Length: 165
Image (cartoon, rainbow, N blue to C red):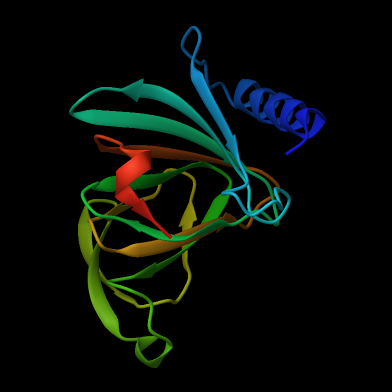
């Protein structure tokens, strides 16, 4: 990514957080990523690490229309993905995606309650709603509103060894 693109994304996310009352801690760690795909406008996400402790972490994320966080899973991390502002669509698979199994039901925690969802079918989260993802559940997400603030609360984060796309 070009420095100008990174600076513009940072400014856009910061303005969105300020508009919606999200006060950031002093000197947060920012991560502006295109997931190594070289196409930030289609595969981009802005993450702000609010807490990164040995036992847990918390992130605040920003995405705009057209940006998808690609399909991935975690070996050990359990996480809640929370729509903090706007609308968020999330596609979830109980294991490695297999088109032959699209639509098969499985149980997932939504807003703390077990619900039956269908593999690979988009699940729309409104502001305040969350899903709990356990290790091995593949997921991809994207905003369906003009801007989207996304929260994550999870067990310890290890980007170098725990994420697989």
